[in-house]
Image 1 (spheres, rainbow over the protein chains, first blue to last red):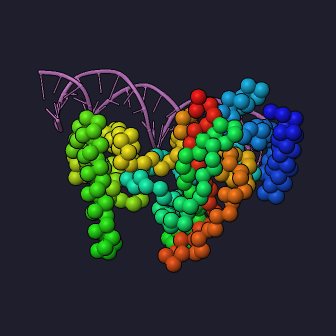
Image 2: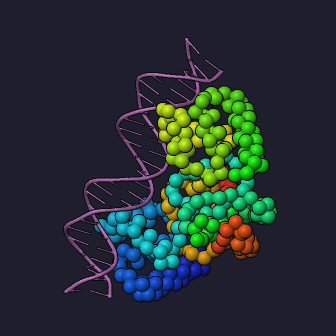
Image 3: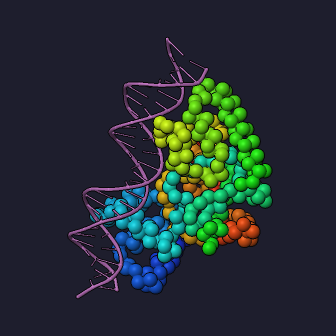
Length: 152
Length: 152
DNA sequence: ATAATTGCAAATAGTTTGCACCTAC
DNA sequence: GTAGGTGCAAACTATTTGCAATTAT
């Protein structure tokens, strides 16, 4: 990672910490060592780590940190809006017999998944092969929102 | 569900069974009662069921069906291309400190997730509130493909 | 001081595996 | 008849919960 990227990253972490401070004060949450350490570790990586990846990274410097705390703190960070969970659905496998390209709508209220098959959304142009070696082959859009049942 | 929809559905199921027959013959897979029943049950619903939902539906009529078989058969159906797993990542929570809208690329080879922040993909117009009551609030695109590491 | 937070251990949920029995071909 | 498929029980992995000990304010 080069100098400029490093700088961006540390600025990003700094901003995150400020956001975290503000959110904690606003809601009367304690700014514990664990919370800050986990936030900084998360903000310092771009690989969307799992609980375990963060735990492995942290419990070395941070003797006595528990996996449970990593779970709970990440939950809290998401609640106060400084982090995001990027697996949209609960951690259960779901299957679909329709193998054609279509998109999904997930209700924020109940978690139910519906199909979105408006062909308008099949017109996204896939990026060509990237200079850095990434080859894009397909895509799928996940919409989030509120279903009729959860609006009432 | 009205008559026309019912018809569509049964035609869909029929086509799926044919696809299944062909795929089994082609690969020398047995067409067991369980496989067919699970395929038909999956093709008969549009709610992207979990293993448990299918199991609950099936093991009533189908005394003695095991949950393990549902897992294994769904796996097989995905392999032979007649079904699709719609949870893209493995069943682990992943987190991101970047809460701004951006998209993800998942490598089919190694499962690693990278960010895609080309602003071109932030221009999708969200559908307005639907007559049927769905309210679309946000979206995120998941690209699939092959990463530099897995191309070599 | 005291209310919130953490760590541990045990519980739970989803999924996978080993192996003996069964069934489609 | 035999290879492949299924069912059961046990193992495993990810996650959650109850509770006593600890820490931030």
